Length: 381
Ligand code: NAD
Image (cartoon, rainbow, N blue to C red; front, side, top):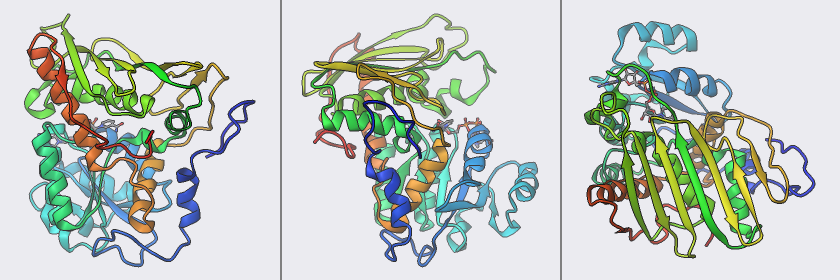
């Protein structure tokens, strides 16, 4: 991970990014599942071989240092032989959704990565935990706070680690924003704009437009990125939220929200304005502070991201975010490094999602959020 040198931004990245490599030689382990002892690279099984697994996670797993693709779980017979030959996966490491629980006996697989439609995250994360496997659960963590609690409790009970697929926490631009916030580089933060949206025109039968499978529309899919960046852009959890919903294509978005704006009030007095949509393209984080400003645009796609600030540009060399994310989680299990996106973070975001829907249902009323420091990792104390 190399930073492109800049006049002002000449400090090293937060130690976490470099720390994993340095720690790799250390002979201790933390939070090991029963299959993980003495390994230096953990086996991951991907559950759900759709677009994200196929085009992002599997290629990233060819580059990871602390983990590798060891197994697959799919409901599509044809994908079994295709993935087996593409990725050299033995037949004993291939499961379907029915026999998935047999994965408990498989010593090659240490981590189960749930990459299914949102409403299936809880079921498969819980089954993975019961099988004694560490769990990475894609965003949004689940479709309700109640489901998030059930996942967290199952992982705690099974003594396995839980991470959410918030890949940005492992990439350098987001870490730089977190550093600005922590070190007060631009003084008090007064306003954060966080936008995460794209225009959807695809198959109207897709699961993202089906509320039973998605749990919601733009807010569940992209809105969690705006919530995330408003929080790491201020380093605080919000005290309250009020929200508005807009619909311009109700014939396409029959069951799910199309566009949502929301205002977050933070303990320091900062205001967060978030925008998420399946009807417009937007991808931005902007923060206005007492002594300047910082911005990322794009802020949340697969990269390369780009950044600027009142002190000068922000620039890093690009690496696969998914590679960094999965290596971070494997290092957390193997060497006790920070879990950058724990279950409490996914649950916190779902509390905010539910509050946003509640505010909309109540005509934009202000909903208090009693979050304390919940889900915060390495931000402003
Ligand atoms: P996708 O539609 O491409 O793939 C979904 C997979 O789930 C398919 O293989 C499908 O066969 C399988 N599936 C199993 N049961 C299903 C059912 N009942 N209905 C529909 N599909 C079913 O979706 P995707 O883009 O790969 O997204 C999967 C998950 O990953 C979602 O939760 C999404 O939010 C998340 N995701 C995260 C990122 C990220 O950047 N972190 C990016 C894309 C997707």
